[in-house]
Length: 296
Length: 296
Image: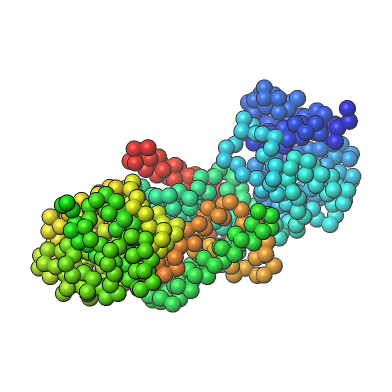
């Protein structure tokens, strides 16, 4: 039998890495799968049949693999890629799954030996749970993945990365890495940080009113703050890695917030109506255009 | 047949007022229902059987009614109550449905003639649609309603207001009006305003990145901004009427936002982790306690 990928290595066998392994395996696209992680995660992945072999050392685990999937937390991507660079096969392709791309991609591309390529990848896939036990082969099915290679990456490598993501059901778009980070700062990082901030502001209220806040936290609060229940480590790392784009969008948000506060303080009825009406219209338009773009 | 309420008047026959009328009627608790609104709304309410008689003048419409339900937008409650005060029956009870209470309740209570009582009411009921055609008799079933009478309101009147809300299926709590406004500023007004502000910040991005923001507005954005699609007039009025409590919570939010921005700017990993971990823990605790309180 001839596989698309004879042998691959997944570094970080959690929900995302495990789902990529399962997705390729279930579609008969991969021969052997090597997992690299802590011992406990590897044992679970072996038991579940997500991987065939296990290594705790990435340098060892990447030997003989034509595809290396770096599915670690964002902050570990660059150090991991640096440590494996000298041990990669001559024609290997390395992809990651980080939600921030700019500096990571720049560093990782530079560390690649001749003939080896790193193609930065960000799969936009939902994840309520984490860990390899939550992994499943269709996680990426119907998702979108943004690839952010610089011009120095070979087009054959980009094409191969695209082929892999499409094989597990994702539609692929190519975007500049810095631009990706600005877009994500606006659409994802800003809403998450503001949800976190609202919850923290409520936590700080004096004890008497906080008790009532707890009682009256209704469905609006639940919806609004759902995204404030994501993994704190992931959000810490995103803030570190995407600092500049996040600080820029936070500044814009703060300017708008000052205008809103001023209008509340002045009792400016027309100004307040304008803010709310514009926002409602924008949201409706965004969702409508998004629906059309998704072909719904 | 002996009714709990022989004759009642609903001023503002929209979703909320119409649902109160239907809720009492369907439970055989009311004899005659008079509606006061613009002509077009009255025609629809008559056609749907929500009201029996129609008036465009509130002063006329309240004659002979032992219960008057003021279901106008928040900004119209106080002017409406002022205009009807001299025309109310000697033993009438007036309730409103506004989501802000402090100054409205204070004014309206003061305008009541001897023997007549105003009991400020805030039903916390979901409403995705508006208008009398969306009204239904079980809108308040399972909801919570906060009553905010001052000490000067007779306990018999408070008891009667409680009886009416419970009759349509709501559970009733009594709260100080100013305190109510602080709690709602935190649990409802702050999240709404921040959702509006996020959407407005995204609207202002340069054209190139805004196009991508539209495309990548995923489910997180949808959830987070759902509450930014509410009625702009209602939110304008809430900002005007609950100005002080809103400015106070906005100040707290801005202070927390400054701390968060500072930690992002400084790349303070421990500080960022602390913010996100605390927020996630708080949210989980709030929802858990809320579940227990609701008996879920």
